[in-house]
Image (cartoon, rainbow, N blue to C red; front, side, top):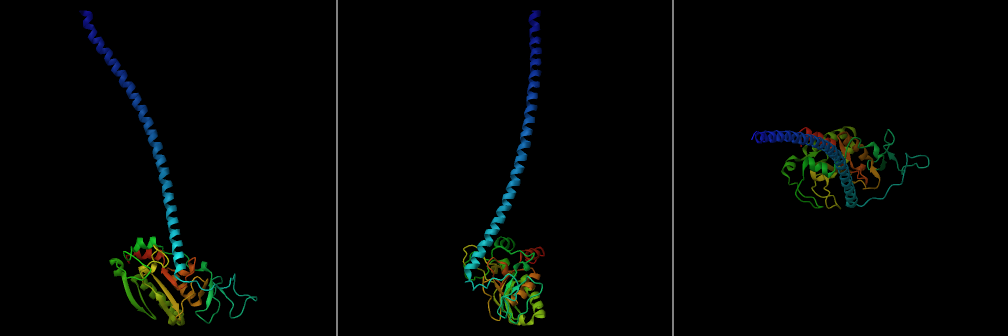
Length: 297
């Protein structure tokens, strides 16, 4: 009986030893598993960070590609909206002895001073690099982000603005020789331009006309690109009742002087388009952002 009495405690002792060994083995296994799991997690997090960085780069490239496609669509649509005029002869510099006289084409913008002319509508060639410096052409993506859609649907014909917020910003003013409907910050800016023009070039000021400002529509020739005229931030001008020839590579002399004043106010000049549209001026992205930050939009 005494031997039988010892069997129970011995079994219990053996069980406790085995349990301790099991706990030690399981603990070691769990510790190893946790280390491996943590290592795998660290590697996964590093891979995810790399994937996110690559995704951000792809998104940035996609935005750039979309902006370029948008500009190309607008250029194509602008090209379809009006027939191009006859191109001017190719010129690489100012008129020389081999190419002189009253009918010789001239290059404007490569020299510090403008060449002399007597006619404000005389066609000149312009060096585009001189203009629109630091001014970004506003595409539809920027316009929609800042001002939203002017209306719910569009055609290639002018239609009224129906968006309440934008409609409340519109105003019609008689500004010297022209009557214009645009958003108020654009009108204030345009007034400053016209004041300078009147003081510096009174003949051009008196001859100034407009071919339109507010006009909610698609760019003619496009099914999706909305004209910047739709937001009341663009204006087409003419001199002595004459429109500048579209996409002919030339620009009326008077528009060159106007372009300098528009650029000073942060407006983008349409002569910078791939297909030149020198009569067109629109508020640049930087100016729109500044107005937005100031609570003017």
